[in-house]
Image (cartoon, rainbow, N blue to C red; front, side):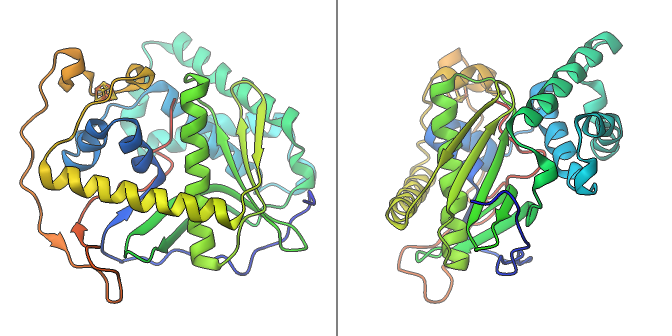
Length: 311
Ligand code: SF4
């Protein structure tokens, strides 16, 4: 795929105001990791305190998005670093509780130094002066045959002059490699299915850029891969609906428990989940959807800049 990219006219911008069952890759991955974690986040809608790791991820993503506002020749490491403070100020203005993340200025300085390191590592992985992304922070969605709507935000979408599409995702976490990688690849395939079903295009490359250790993972999907992922997503949604109907949201302890903000309520850590909230009425499936496609409304927490994997 060529490094130079051109705008993608064919990528659909999000439709707002839609209703019906929907799923984001973050929440799908939550259910795969631990059904009880999904329940805490989606059914109980329990608040979660901001974390320094998640905030650092949000900040680095914001800087990389802004970097491409600069003329190509100005996309240099020092320009990216200069964007850190103003982007952080903007994030704190939008979400004032972020300001309380650090005990003192030294702690904040150390955290900021880590963000600087990640940006420096980014420049060792690719040369942004040779790129012209078609989209950044692109909202995508597609409705599957069952009526389930897939939604999410893609960090960056590159389109080559020949029309090849590359989905790019930046990762800033430090979770155990084997758990994190499976989750990250599933997320990328989820995005690929969403683009495929909305635009009819199989992305040429899915590219994960690990800014924590400087690794890049590239994967070339084909239609068979994406069809298998789609079946997995549909099966996952049926499992979510079964858990919702039965109230059986099992906890599944694993390495990612270390990052779970709800340990105190989890039986695996001696806690007791709160009573389940009243079940909302089922959403009728959209016209033309297959039987059994209805699901409770309000399930979705869309992956956005404050809903990143911090692991
Ligand atoms: S602590 Fe672990 S097992 Fe418990 S809810 Fe969180 S992720 Fe699931």
